[in-house]
Length: 193
Length: 193
DNA sequence: TAAATAACACAACAGTTGTTATGTTTTTGA
DNA sequence: TCAAAAACATAACAACTGTTGTGTTATTTA
Image (cartoon, rainbow over all chains, first blue to last red; front, top):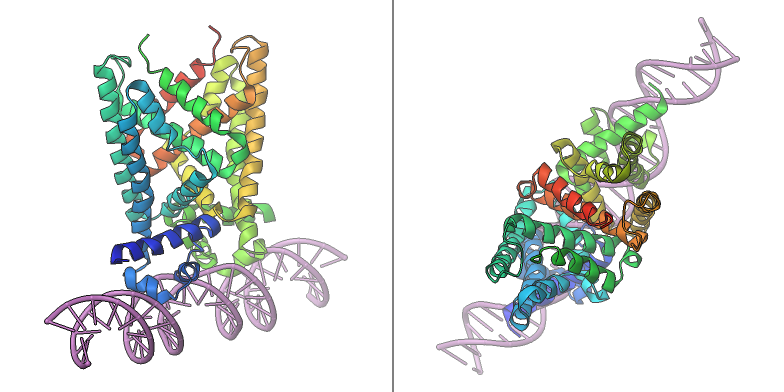
């Protein structure tokens, strides 16, 4: 097991603690305990907590992005857009933990410009991908030609964020099929008349 | 100046610190400093930090609810629904601070069942109001009769949450009119054919 | 005005935090 | 095989946390 693998194990332990206890109660010692080791391991693989924090944030994001890229290969047309948005939703309970971590980070970022900046970067990347995909759909005349693609991409991100936030806080209010229905209905609105 | 007024001043100082520094960096001492007093004041008006925290959460929520009730008197029909959703959005910069506090609370609540429960209660209240309003609109045959009102209320909440979250994180991406357009478009979808 | 109570200041407390230094063990590489 | 380096453990640190107790000042009340 190499350096990066062990490093990833530390981050995964951090994820578990964050989802269970919250980000502000995720101390170096708590991560080490979750990992079944001492704090020496944590400090050995990360210079400080901020570095660990930023790396964890990147990993959460990258895991979703990887799924999205794989999904883009399997589908096409409007269904591709739908499916990609679906896998960002917390449809299963396991996805909910990812969103717990993400939401914990968002809240933790209030008042921390460095972290806000990181979020902007990641949301920007996501937006780029969606705009590109919407442009393709527009070129294929599958969605309405007068749409402002940047705006529509932001709208889709806001929709998914809003649904996921509510599912994390109050899971009973949105069943998996209801989440999907909401996204489907929004995407349907983009379709050519 | 009575007890409740001074108590409110303490909470407002807490809001300012939360919006500026983040919830986990909002210590009793930081609140006292923002207030220009000693920690004795804070501990005098609140038994402990959790009591202050929950009270602050309630106040943020109540201030929006009060605005909503006032708004409900001024408008009617589908416009009333629209306007009420509008004033929940962070259209102005001052509203953005409220949402910063709200989002900080949401993230802070991850792993804290007590706080999650509080959020459920408040979102439940909001949902009740929206369902009631949708029922009126349905009775007046202004929105489609086959709608699942509970689901639609949750959809509206998710939409507003999603927009607001993105505005707080990345203000440049949603102008005030774009936020309103998004809500308007969604509400328009509910209208009878 | 005098006593009582509310409002506030201040200090000390035990606990937790991230970080660092200094060890010890294990693995690697020549 | 044996030194060098990586991996890990442990302990101590200064700083900060919420809470509590004990004063001091201001306001009310009788």
